[in-house]
Length: 253
Image (cartoon, rainbow, N blue to C red; front, side, top):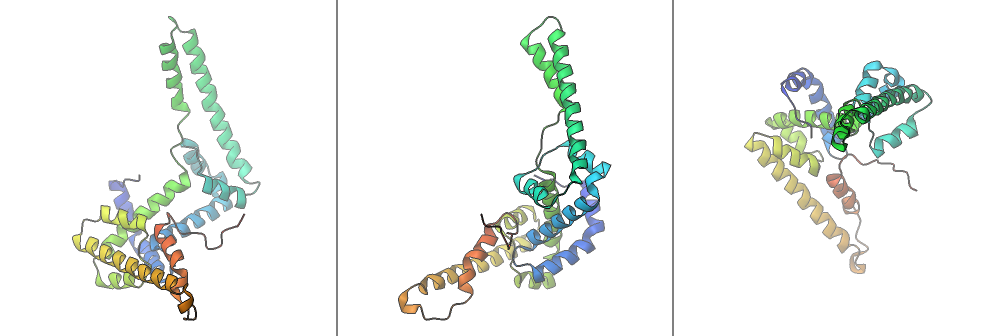
């Protein structure tokens, strides 16, 4: 889990006006959780710049090579939206990967030739070599998303001390379950926690009512009643439970 430090808070202070503008826009426009919506926008922007310029940027390549891993979602996105320019990206990663493996083989051979020979001795040499063959600590794009979400949430929790921002929040979708729980965990303001809980309960009560209305209108006795928002209640519930903004146009298999 992302844990902010002093440098992160200093950086956050410089970015706060930009973040506030993004959050304000999301509270007005997002069909679901405003945090998820802005994170998705930032990920889309990151991918656009990656394909345009960063695919061969040495600092980007070194950062990826440090902990090379891609989750299924972001690997599929690279496959879907990428092009031959990514040959440069993955050539670099393969060269770095092979360097790590060759170093590991060298360490293994040295352990084998060391005397006195033992399995424990060999394992020591092997593990020493693993420092050049780092573990995969999660998808880089996922980590960036988590950091962005934490930044946005920290700013929102501060702004919810203001009546104007509470009014904006009340007419928005509100936070998804994941960011609601994170917000309740992170906030140091009892009044903000109380506000988030009251708003979440109000939204869930509305959904509960809409589901009751939906099933009422399935009954033949009420089938002629005009249909409304209750027809999309399950989609609203899905957005609440989703770990991210759902794709509005998913590809069907």
